[in-house]
Length: 89
Image 1 (cartoon, rainbow, N blue to C red):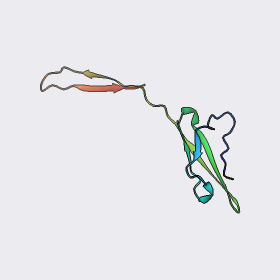
Image 2: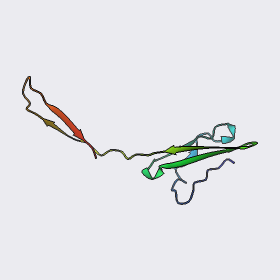
Image 3: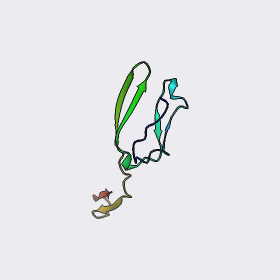
Image 4: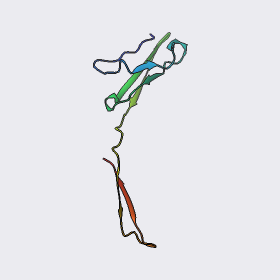
């Protein structure tokens, strides 16, 4: 039907658009800008020509990791062994 149903309270209205100007030309792909963890969910594509075809896609948006904390374990001596460690929340 050439429109996007955003759902209630989804916050997607200003961030979702069809990739092609006219989805009736066989490409109803959408683009979601500024992805957020809250965008995680099941998205449904309904295409109606002679019949209705429905396809669901599960989207999982994960948070960007925090800056890592890195450190060295062991003695920094020539020929010795050290362990380089990094951790991110």
